[in-house]
Image: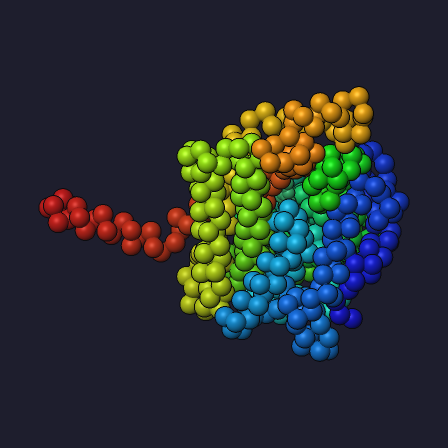
Length: 478
Ligand SMILES: Cc1cc2nc3c(=O)[nH]c(=O)nc-3n(C[C@H](O)[C@H](O)[C@H](O)COP(=O)(O)OP(=O)(O)OC[C@H]3O[C@@H](n4cnc5c(N)ncnc54)[C@H](O)[C@@H]3O)c2cc1C
């Protein structure tokens, strides 16, 4: 097989998967209205690949057929650039609003497969497994969800110290064909609308936590696997009233493993703490690159939105508005420059930090900060405009539409246009969709305190300290 069409993608989700949402079991996720908007956005991403093959695909090394650019194992800077452009085109297509668009996990699987030797260092079969799995995903254009984190019950204790040792998913027993696992993981964005679940390593495990040091992938319709979705946000209010919720609510789910069989050939790390703890830090960096590109797309969108708002209310000439807008634009430029700077790092074998430094710093430090700042500035600039946004139905009511058209128009926008603009902003900031986006941007790449702390482990820290020591010594202070 090669790249899929949107229709083929949608068809592939009609299986026996067990998904619960809003208190009911969803018989067919493709027909469930609250999932429909995000599903259509994903399908459009699959169609986009077919419409722009030259920009978004490369020839499969196995078959010569076109496969998704986010699976390319780049050997040159030009090839990383190709990936960057392709991922940017797809992230821009969804305005950076789908954090877990398929490209993200495609990149993650490519990272894992690029480090197959690390996974197979003790048992070569695990290295072979990830290589085969990467090829399966690439050749079938699969859409993955992933889950890394343990249930947040008592964070003061590790998974082995919880009152129930099966709270965090772990093996129950081994069989000839695989390992039976039980417990839960959280959370898995896109779970109901993807084909496969990748369970990966993230937070370090300690000695005694071997049972929790697993990495594997299974189809979403595997018996015993259950996804319990958070409350859905798309309640059918439509494009005018919920311009973003109606298209991009990609869902998040709790993942339950009720004695699920993980076949041996789908196991990549098994009860090995050293490998579990080291692979994330040794990743080549495709995941970071894609995540930065997606973050950049969203920042551009936020900056553009802020500019529209300033103009809509006639404030774009005010100095402090211009300074705030300039700050947002400068932040976009900073992120954009760092993403480009990160491209060569992906092929630089000598890089001290894996994943690469510029990309990791951008993802773990800068992007969460500037996302928060952008939201704060849009709130400040908007004032009550964010709140006074009557509905589509109000505009259809002849008794009041005249008032709306008179009092809610913008400097050079009709009332409908101005209200639509502010509804877009409120959907992105104030509605459940927007609040979730805010939480997502802060946490999706891991707890920023944990990820930032990794920079303190860099060898350059000694270099920086030496600078100060040198000055102190030159003053005769030891
Ligand atoms: C919208 C959304 C989507 C997500 N999608 C996915 C996904 O698709 N796949 C996936 O695997 N994960 C996903 N995540 C999970 C994400 O990886 C985690 O939220 C993140 O790693 C933080 O973990 P946590 O949520 O368990 O928070 P915690 O680790 O419990 O952190 C909560 C707070 O405690 C603080 N804290 C941490 N350690 C300490 C300490 N020792 N002392 C004091 N305070 C501490 C943290 O800084 C934070 O402020 C998603 C998260 C969100 C919000």
